[in-house]
Image 1 (tube, rainbow, N blue to C red):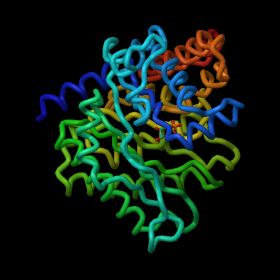
Image 2: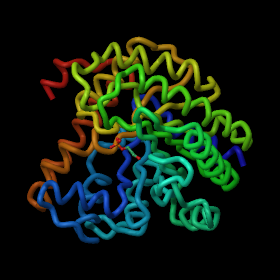
Image 3: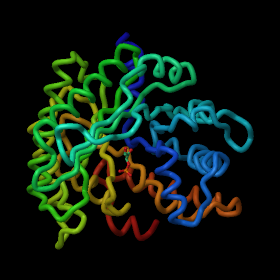
Length: 339
Ligand code: 13P
């Protein structure tokens, strides 16, 4: 069993590379498309995901792409199954397997993610179609009262059960506990919540005998709320996030691939870069698994038009390249401008 998990992890942690999350559910991608005046249909979603997946040279920066179920069966413009188009270039196909959130009874304001029932069967089918890793996201909103202790424990338990089921089937689980950026809370409050969340998650992973060597952690960075001014500097974000991770994430975890969570594309790059500058010898790889911060420029440039595909692909290529530099602490504002 570990042979397969080990091989997948080895690919995902390749130096200079990160993960693209292109796994928005139909309602989420529809919201993003509609905000830009793009129609959301099975065909426009296919065309857009094919654009990302077939961007020339992207394999230099992207080790894996997380797909949504619908995309797993779709084809590139030339008729090649998208999964084959990725695998041929050494990009590992992954799959989002959670079914979104509902309110958690007994914990007003907290959510819990659904999808554990029948997960093993679904994973087997996804694996048959080429998926080698999976993603599951739990979300935690920050208010004066949330997340509650019950919310933190219940979400951790679900994440750990998902991870254990994945490993049993030799699929690498991306474990994603996302403390949300919404609100006007301080950076310190985000730290406090993220600390409680990660402690609970790793206790639960231990309880469920998840092998830490074969997971990828996908956490939020430690940031002040989106409405809080002034913003934190990259150094402040990096310092707080590194302190949090050192205190909560065992060194056995091979890779931490951050979500972008509503930061601007350049902020997400700058923050990742600052962490790699500050901690070049961190026990884990510090990389990216962004959706919005990798896709925003490309989606806007594409705007649903065939004639914009090449320009959108170069926008995606540029962001992937900037984040690849940040993964080694080699990005700077001048390079960003030049790009
Ligand atoms: P963002 O980078 O847009 O936060 O998305 C990451 C992700 O995959 C959320 O589950």
